[in-house]
Each structure stands twice: as structure tokens, then as C-alpha cells.
Image 1 (cartoon, rainbow, N blue to C red):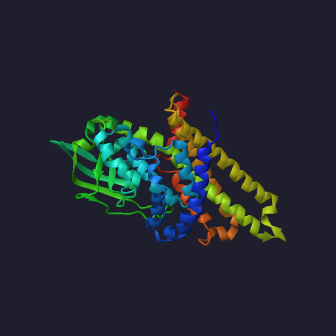
Image 2 (cartoon, rainbow, N blue to C red):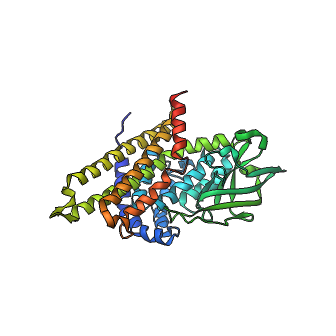
Image 3 (cartoon, helix red, strand yellow):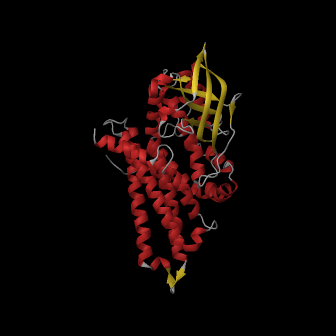
Length: 380
């Protein structure tokens, strides 16, 4: 296995780097401060056709490999983690469609996702059912050719912004995890957004509660078979977690880049602080851990591209996501330290990087749950 990027991937990385510096980074602080959806940055991403990367060519997308998608996620997060989420969330919401839905559903929704016309959200977590997915209470009861959906979902990215919601609900309460099914639900009557969270980080990415009150969903919008929801959810998260690792790598890299530049311009004891060995070693350790995280993320993404031939994706994805996010938290904390008092102010971006890094240790499976997955693989 080669860990070198192809010439096309390197060229794409260079283009993304310039794009983020010119079209995304300049807006990041304002959107974070105002807690509003990063519309200018999202529109720029649509101009670059970035939403199409994760959509297969047969449905109007670019069909990019996962390593290329990881490069995109990393570069966007280097400038604005909230903007990276606006692109990644539609891919997460559509992965069940890509892998399990009918051709009719695929042709109806995927081309519109690819163009950026619509966005998608992924509705799995509930107020009392995060890591313990099987304890969800959201219900979908069959009524002729439809299902009647009732319940609420918590911590939903793009709540109220997205036009479609991939919803997991109980169709058989006695079946435990085997009683969960998956549905594609359009925003409309009965779909409500009563609460948005005031968050520590990712403040420009709306996160909220989605409530379903007697929402009628056509049976044709069920994804997969009844009772396949848990399997679909886990299959999806295995293929999404590595890009959360890529997002974490991007946040860490952004912090390293800024701290390094700051060190060269800041003087103490008659010389730039970049010449102080203790601080140089801090920056070096930050870069070493980030490079290791990047390699692990690429390894997991390459495994997806290869079709998981050795059935190690759950293990590698959990490892990549947890290591990269722990690295991002450590690196951004050190970046704040390198800037001293200035790092603690909103005049500089490292405090935003630190706040944004924290959620990567939590969403799409807490790092404690990822260690359960890793240990299960080692001890099977």
C-alpha cells in the first residue's frame, strides 16, 4: 500500500489550499461570532462543486475517492471548521441513500445534493439515546402505504437548514436494535425545529432539535428493509468517521500554521520566540502528532476505497477518528499556549480552533466508544 498522494490528489490539495485562504478563511471569525450559517463560504463551495465529490457519477456527482474527500475536509477545516461541516453533513445524510436506497430515491435526491441545491441531515441521536442508539424512542408506525413518524432527534447538524432528513426510528419496539428502520423525510408539515443549541464551538454550524409530529412518510421513502436501520447506521458511521478525523487534522494544521507564523514575528528576550528551544519543540511535537493523524486518516479512507477487503474498517475508522481528534484538542491547546495571553483572546483564531476541536472528540461516536470498538477488534 502506498501512502503517497497521486499527482491529481496533490493538485487538488493545492487548489483547495488557495481556495480556502481566499474564499473561506476571511469569513470564519465573523460567522463564528454571529453564530449564523456560513452562507458566503457555502456558496463558494458550491461554485467549486465540492458537494458533488461524495456523490457517485451515476447520479450527477464527481464520485471522488475517499482520500480526496478527506483532503477537502481537512483543507476546509483548516480555514473554518463550521464550513467543513456544511459539506460533510450532506454526505453523511446521503450515505444511507447511496448504499441502501432504491434507484428511484437515488435519482430523485442525489443529483440535487451534488449541485448544492439541497442539503441533508442525519437524524440518529436523541436526548437520551446518543451512544446507546438502541434506546431511541422515535417511532414510525405503518399506515397503509405510509408510515406515521413521531418523536424527536437531538444534536442534529443543519437542523432547519437541510431540506431532507435521514431519520432512524423504531418500527418494532420489541426488537431492540433490530427494531430500528431508516427513512428519508422531507422538511414540511409536522417537521419542527423548536430549539437550536448555543455551542462552545462550530458556532456557525446550526445544531438543533428536530421534532416529528404525525409526519406521513411514504413507504417508498424507507431506506432498506424494516429492521435494517441499526445496520445501516453503523455501516454509515464507519464510512463517515474517517472524514471527521480529516476535519480534526485540518483544525490542528490551522493552529500549527498560525502559531508558527506568530512565533516568527513575536519577540521576547531580544529575539523571535521561534528561536527559543522549548517553544520550537512544542511546535515540532504538534506537527509530528498531526502528521501521524493524517496518515492514519488516509489509511482508513484508502480502506473504504478498496472495499474493506480485510474487514478492518471499523477498527481503522475508530482509531483514525479518536487519534486525530485527541491530537486536534492537544495541538490547539498548545497553540493557545504558544500565543500566551493573545491566544486567549478572540483577536486571534487559535481559541476558535481549540473550541472547534473539542466536538471532534464527541460527535459521530465519542472517543470512549471508539476505544470500545478498537478493543473489540483486538479481543475478538
